[in-house]
Image: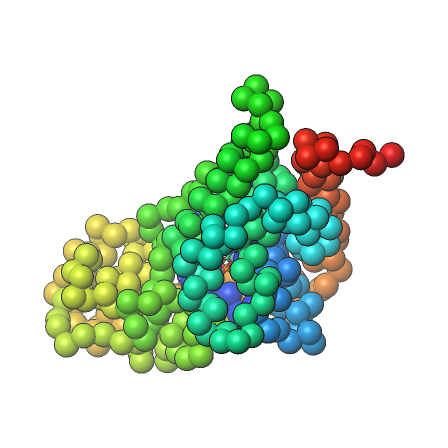
Length: 337
Ligand code: TYM
């Protein structure tokens, strides 16, 4: 039996933060032992909002280096850059032509992001979820490990595969595309902002104090946690809807300290913020220290990363081209010789 397939990715837009790690990358690391795992840096998605061309390549490599630093092992998975496998753009076009416009217009992330862009909203931003569907469907992915915010995009990918491709161009016995499932773990699936417990930690928040990035030095991590929003109550607890910041910070402590939710809930039940915040800062610094050390080695020796990305590209391309040909055939295109 072939191992089930996993595909996921992160956009190289600015520094990766705790949400990207705990909501997504941390889960990939577990899956690579049991699944045929493909992870890409989705640089084509990064240009759906205005971007800086002088930064794109460096950010793309830095994101790939962070995958490795977080524990992705090129011997057990394939790591590649999305734009270097041309099949992503081509399948996106084919899927565009069968995806109803109104499916895209109701995407929550599009609505939120397009408000910020005003008159400058690009067709690419609207089309973002179709490109994401292409990323996933090209690899016949069974599972897509992502944070909670990507659930709607995953549902769209499933609907495109099932209703728009398989139902129209395949048969029950011979589906054209594999229909993927999201994998959203409970813990870490929605890491919230340090400055507002009701909005998620995000790369695009103009306030840098709202997030801890994976490359923040220890002093900065400590400073951001010290300034993180709290409430006047003493004692930390999970699940109180009036105390979203408390829930978030305690949840981060549970994961970063490795102690788990039950243990930290007991430990911190009567604790004041003055005692808790240094503990959380210490746990965050300790958890990020090995990642930062490995990242520095990788960035200092670019040959290793180049090799990993080239090998990843070759493996990815072989799988992606086979699927693309299957779709081209199902849609009736003249075959390539
Ligand atoms: P991006 O770069 O916005 O996010 C990358 C991953 O991080 C997760 N994430 C979070 N998880 C928990 N708490 C948070 N505050 C938080 N913020 C982000 C996201 O859910 C995601 O898993 N559209 C994707 C990129 C993509 C993709 C794909 C993913 C493009 N093609 C194919 C999977 C498969 C995205 O959100 O990127």
